[in-house]
Amino acid sequence: MDKPSDMFDRDYEWAALQRFITDSQPGATLGVVSGRRRRGKTFLLDAACRAAGGFYFGATEATDTESLRRISTALTEHSRPASPYHFATWAEAIDALLALGRERPVPVVIDEFPYLAKANPELPSLFQEALRPLREQRTSSRSRLLLCGSALSFMGRLLAGNAPLRGRAGLDLLVHPLDHRLAADFWEISDPRLALKVHAVVGGTPAYRREFARGDSPSGPDDFDSWVTRTVLNPETPLFREARYLLAEEPDLRDTTLYLSVLAAVAEGNATRGGMAGYLERKATDIAHPINVLEDAGLLHRDADVFRENRPTYRIAEPLIAFYHAIMRPVWDQLERPGNAARVWQASRRRFTSNILGPHFEQVCRDWALHHADPDRLGGLPARVGHGIVHDPKARKGYEVDVAAIGIADGTKAPMLAIGEAKWNDTMGIAHLERLQHIRDLITQAGRFDTAHTRLLCFSGAGFNDKLRAAAQTSPDVQLIDLAQLYGRN
Image (tube, rainbow, N blue to C red; front, side, top):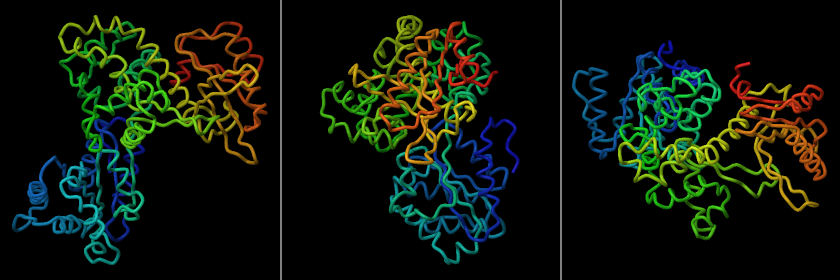
């Protein structure tokens, strides 16, 4: 299976699909592929089918009868049987799909499977029965069935708990968005500061550049403001309404009003359940269900406080949705009128920096520490990286830690490998280092973590002054990380 030359990255996903599809073991096998829309799942699976001579079927929102008619027609065109297929039931259709693999391992893709299951909730059970051990249609087949879907809440339940297909799948592949480094390469942006600003708006979803922005990428740092107004804030482009459609695509979000309000609360900086409840003027128990649904849908991410496990905070997982709620939704009526984008953006730039860029920069710093940093630089391989509040009992105040890297516990205490502070627009100085030293002392006094070798990390999008640089040169415990390092440019 040769990966298409026009497929950007996705080496991991392609290799996983190749191992699954070309597995020569006898018997049909099942795989599940999920991921939010626009991330390239269809392109990936269709390319795999073309490379391996497989069958691809893209489901649509339709009645059960119409879907059976469509797959009958598609399979007839693919297989060219002596007489056309006219499936009366899905059991017949599934057995025909299994028959495709009688001669060799062959991929059989059903894309947007949640559409089919919505019209016929028995479908997962029918696949379970078709893939029953020792069933002749399964044992005589080497079809590699791949069920794919964009509704993350539904796909997440497909193999969970007591679901019919639990234990039947040999592949469970989640197609992630591109991280900040890959996204910069994909958008062909060499300037790390510009790359992070673009990533804070559109994240790592490939389709947002190729289809939605028609390949329009900022030509340089001075073009960023113009790029925002001619793409995301332009009512003529698909990006303009994309954040709204992402909510509408989730089947579990029936009444979107409350869900939109919860996301708006988080975008306003109310990251705790209590904060959200106060913003919405409701009891915390009233918003527990919408928070859980948004988590299952992959739209809201729960971050446990590293220092207080019972105090989680929440952040919007999709940058475009965060941008929409912080910048676009409050002035939607103005933006819908052509010609207002530049005026609105001019008034929103400070809000963009404080509500979007600052928090996004902090998250990128945490991602760097977890996935990209050399373990020697952190003093070990982090088991998890998060953030939290360290309480000072004497001063009766809390100190926020933007980055906290925790190592693997060998004894009674887990090592606190590093703590860090992230400042997007501030030139960091010796006061920031002294603050981290004080926080490290407080963590030591609390006694929960081993801080004997804790490193102090200063992340800055604006640079460091001479005193801080001098301190870093004399102490290996002090690490300075700028944008170029976050993007692996030096």
